[in-house]
Length: 628
Picture 1 (cartoon, one colour):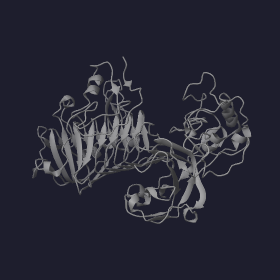
Picture 2 (cartoon, helix red, strand yellow):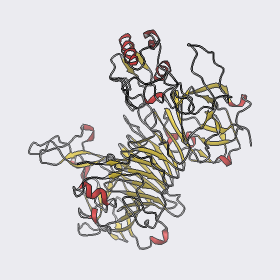
Picture 3 (tube, one colour):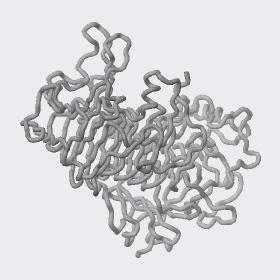
Picture 4 (cartoon, one colour):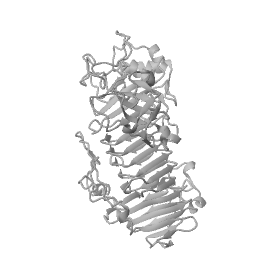
């Protein structure tokens, strides 16, 4: 049986429009304006007593809302009483029965709209409409968060268990009723059973933990529970704002921040996430779709050992809104999608060690920058036209979410409606921007000046970080120069045996003994390691003149890429005969790689490698951004 059929043809990027029929879930969106909230059930949280529509909350399981102290958590044990393995958690994931019992669970068991206010210092809001809800289109719950503070130390602070799953095709496949399922990026989730609205003018704080994988007690080690995020849904979930869209949802997570096991659509509101691991994760492999249509999303991920900003195990679609996403500096990506990321609109600033580039048929122009050395995330990134007009400016020091965490990075994705194909831009790092910003992102029309930044240059395009040779030494038309052919039998994407992907989250040389990647991204290479690297590279080019001594002189991956020609192509530079802005370079076999300060955008998705300081302060340059 074919488990999944993945779409093979080039995808036409899509803008998600309400009322348009898409694959998976269709129908009219849930109302999100306050005029429709009058009939909502009113839940007021408090440690000394919870009320529902003004009355003391019930403790009866038959009620639409009731409280209990039976939270699902990872117990302090390794086996069940009969000796079967309990789960995959470590000592750090375990909690005592006393700690769990101290938490009050507010259970919601009936479909409807619930407005939640107040606070719980140890508690959880859990929505569960029963095991049959997954196939019931009426099993829909909307939570209106209107000034709520919930802290949960042993599990997610908010969790949707069983509600309607609007992707009925997946449900049929998952339950063995159909033979295959085709994963597509254009899902419509408007009839999802899990819905969250961030009320206008409200500030909501969700501080939650997680539940490591717990096995069923049958000796087969099959999953019973596993909830990785502070805010979690087992089914497709929508998140939206109110009429004005100025409500705030702050998520603080010891593990992941905002997760679903199926699809997630964000339409509005201001969402700030600080997480130990991934900021957002949609985790059904080769199926889940994360869609961002609007709102403001600010993520600082990987405050623990690892973490992507946004991690979709299927597709990532950014159609609008603002996305600021900072990943674990040493190992992870601001954007990460197994089946592809599409940037069709909005403003995007994503940073990490490497980047999951947007697909080439995205609708909006994107710049992918791979820096030669780690950058400091407390410095602004500014993009100007050739005339010095600022078209993009972001200063993390002004961002309340990212500004509180100094996150280094070496890869960055920038996307803006102001970028145009066929235009040249300058990139600056650092300096002071004068104008009006919202959480660090400046409205270009409001910018009155900029000074103190350092102009950047790049040494190559189609970043070779996808493998030695990377995008290859291609000419401007995308063709390989004569005499630069792949070895016989070489398949696209293939690498020498034992060599990992230099763009992956792991050490790309982890299988080559004698080559070690340090925490700061530098390399330590022994003579044996250099010899092994050279041997592997000769499988690609038997005539290479690179020596072991030259490899030993390399201190980072970029230098290795340059040594083996991974940064040599011209995609992203001006066509032949139009090379203004390039630094003069000597010719000959020992000529260094060409560098340029002109970031010329040839396509919707443009990659630049070896990005580094030109060495001249912007104010001292005639072409520095000008005062308006």
